[in-house]
Figure 1 (cartoon, helix red, strand yellow):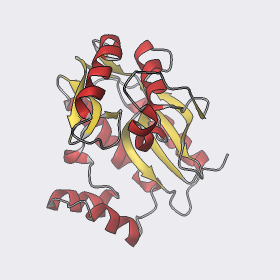
Figure 2 (cartoon, rainbow, N blue to C red):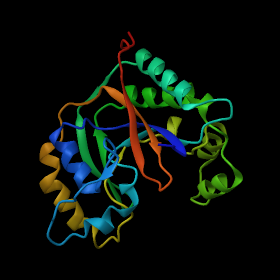
Figure 3 (cartoon, rainbow, N blue to C red):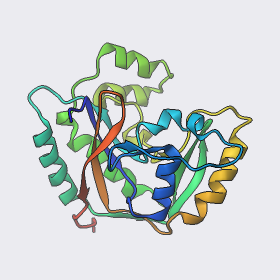
Figure 4 (spheres, rainbow, N blue to C red):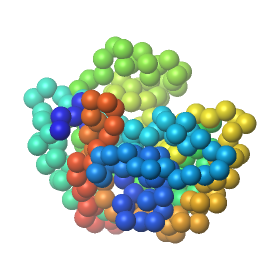
Length: 231
């Protein structure tokens, strides 16, 4: 399969009960690269609620989607991802919790995020030689949201506003919802997903993923984090 863009994700372990439910909640499974049947939850239109995040699959973005720079290629990117993962230690935090990000719902980390943020910043920096510069249309689209000076600097330097000190780890579970719908969706996730969430929460690998011509993301390879923790 030919991909238009590539990204580095945290993709929750496919075998975990919580990630199996959350994958079905979204309706797209990156592992086989196929749609999956969403759960039937009375009173919720999950097709509509998850329409925007569905194509990305269950994930937290570590290095945002990028087109490959001229002179690079997928094989070289795979090799670089393997080398990067071999230098990085697994990260352990207290757990995950459900949070509102504006009018979106997502899972956020509970506990100290210092090591996680350092991992994400290193990934953005070390793999940046593979990123083609953002075009003017893409830059304009990002700026339309209204950026702080730091986010503008990130956009110019790294191709995306919300990296480095503006990075916020999150696993998106909905599109932008009307305020009136948020409580019912929250209640459903609290009932079905929260009891399954892991404590502690570990990141033991990162995933290289690719975007197909229809905008859906597929798992290419998982890379175990096998480095040593900083002393």
